[in-house]
Amino acid sequence: MTLTDKNHLIEIFTSLGRQLAEPDETLSAVIRNESFHNAWFTPENVKHSVRAIGHMLNTEDLQKWLSNYKTGASYPKRVGLILAGNIPMVGFHDILCVLATGNIALIKLSSQDSRLIRHVMQMLIEIEPELKNQIIFTDRLQDFDAIIATGSNNTSRYFDYYFGKVPNIIRKNRNSIGVLSGYETDAELNLLGHDIFDYYGLGCRNVSSLLVPEGYDFTKFFEAIESFHPIINHHKYHNNYDYNKAIYLVNKQHHLDNGFLLLKQDEKLASQLAVLFYQTYATLDEAVNKLNAHAEEIQCVVTQMQLDVKSQLVGFGQSQAPKLWDYADGVDTMQFLSNL
Image 1 (cartoon, rainbow, N blue to C red):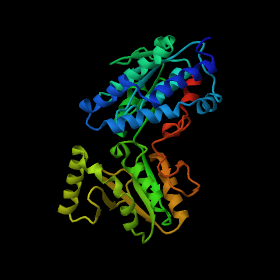
Image 2 (spheres, helix red, strand yellow):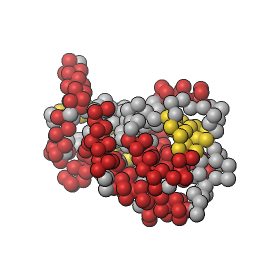
Image 3 (cartoon, helix red, strand yellow):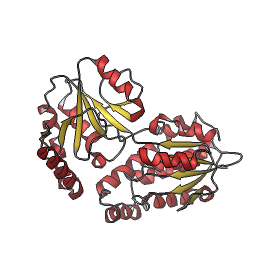
């Protein structure tokens, strides 16, 4: 049995999924210790991320995903991966894609998330020792055939300059947006709270802006998300909340405040931490046009409505639970790697 065999790959990744979904004591210790290195990586958030990846790596979804691609590579390519570190293990999917296509992952970790992925990769190697030849951690990328780099709009310009001559996927800033009809239930709005607050709002799949109908009353929204109030107890989040609140008060900028989230009308998609922007729409056609005009900046659209938009639609509470085929920026990573 070789690593080019799809069924064998599915067995390997499913086995890892089971271990991540129910962390043993060794992995649990790594999860607990992350907050000593990165204050945003609380045990609750790290465990949530690890388990989400574990549930993603199930046999049914792996079969569905891999059935669309050729696995293994006759002549493996060395693929440089520049990983982000905004939320725990955010770069795992890129590594998974490189391994599944039989290529070699040259992994440059973010300093914000440099321990957890190493540990999980060691778990994978213990399941299938042959994968050791496909996983290389490095502080400096060199001798690569392709690049997948995730960063900001600023760093993307440097990535373009340094890596533009090889096949590449270079990701920029993206944000997610929620669209409300005004008829959402309390339960739906509470689920939307997860899309806003999970990982403290630091992920590109976190909702940073809302589209609401003209005249929308935010009272029901604030009541529905009250259960997320404990987020204010995190000192770094609280500092951001206090800072942004002070700016709005000093500049006399109109905003709403429920004690742990600031809501401000603004056409920008990317809001500051502890702030949620919103825009209004008169008709659904207007809302769709706004979304499609900014499709290149949107990671996903969170709503209960079926809208004809270019971006990925997800239901309330689902933005941080992507499937294997929900590719960042809508770029098919597996297809890219298969064509190298």
